[in-house]
Image 1 (cartoon, rainbow, N blue to C red):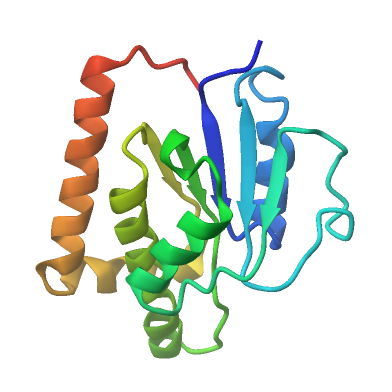
Image 2 (spheres, rainbow, N blue to C red):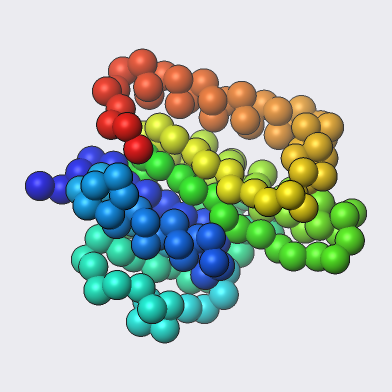
Length: 173
């Protein structure tokens, strides 16, 4: 039986994103997710990524989160056939930079664009995970201090999640 939970992993070509894809196939059970879709900016084929031969896995390359939110929405809509069924998002995308300011400037828009796309395309979203490390604390401060655009997007996403949660029984993931 296929699960109604569908995972979307941004940053699937990185260590954390790749590991999240692998774990989503079996944890907490092998039937938790009916599909697991990895999103990458860089060109990457499923075989080259050393992903298991599992029909639930799909790898979508060429989604550049640094572009406009409209471009991200269009790329996801065109390349993820079941985008409206996504229930769980794991955000592992990251652009490395040696200095704090460049790190924030590079990473803030990718989170904003992903959130805008999710708000627009994923009415069934139940769960969002922002996977970060210690170097991203400055990015989070920047997001918190930025104009109300991010605050409103996060609030809208949270309200959408609350509405979905109040009408849906959530399987513990």
